[in-house]
Length: 113
Image (cartoon, rainbow, N blue to C red):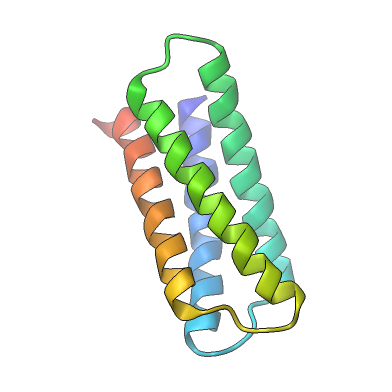
């Protein structure tokens, strides 16, 4: 399941790069990419929760989940701007991406480390 979680979040990250590129240029991001990004993020979180519920998960998995949940909360905040037809604040996009990257790297360290 760890392989799937890393793959899901990696694909979500590609979508996140597309979204961030739009916002950093002062443009609204495409809705379709936003929705797919959110759905992949949710699927990744559900996968991590399932892994934790199986028991015996290392502490880094819990840390990765915590960071990625925090990133998801930031994503909800960013989506609120999108819903209002406004471009999200660039600083929030950067913080969201940074937390997500740290969470992803923490998760990937279980696979590659």
